[in-house]
Length: 303
Ligand code: AMP
Image (cartoon, rainbow, N blue to C red; front, side):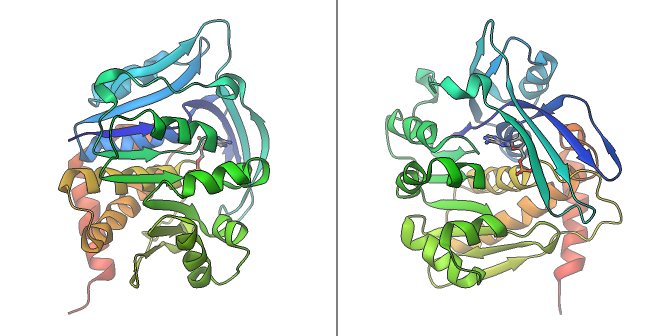
């Protein structure tokens, strides 16, 4: 069994009401790989960076057991760069800069030994690259999970609709679910998105938790109430990685397993926001995760 992760590995710059970072490591697949590799030990990464990237971060991924042989390094080119600015409430943000750089011409070359994964997590990337990735696999994985964002709805909607037909689970935030479905009610939005392809839709609502929509079933998991949120960047990807890592570790794709999956996703995302960038999620252990799961249990348990 194995889990293939694809997505952006990038530089970010983040402005929050509490401070700004310079260029730091970010990218959807960076957060996903850090989260999945805590819960599951057969994770492979396919991504691209420029020669300017911080390669110490790749060593961190390797030390967590991530197979990085599918990471391409483009000499003479720059890594993907994203600059975001959070509003006072820390729930909403504006994208100030998106420089695709190496992502603009990314051809996802998958090493032979990674072409038969049981699980795939398509992180935020151009839908065209997400489709190519699935087409290059040697068999249909047991479960294909995918994340996306408004950027791709704005510039590549037909391709996004095409990849949606190929996936089983979509993780998406509330604002984006509304944009994609054209429906304000999240229950109706989920139903409309399910009709576009994925039988399971997970709507992430930031500090207000996450909703899981299966076939005829709904489940809700709160986010852990935290006194301080420093940087929500990557929380959605960390959530998706926690979900994917849990599902891969159990081998079950039942609704019951997915309920626990969103609990693990929420748990890992609660760490992510405690420091800027990937720092916190890169520094935790399974012991930290288990301690925090107990807090979740207290939060949601009724006799
Ligand atoms: P999240 O906060 O979970 O929505 O994810 C933030 C991460 O997404 C950042 O680390 C960015 O590098 C990455 N990102 C932002 N825009 C894009 C994009 N258009 N394509 C791929 N990754 C992106």
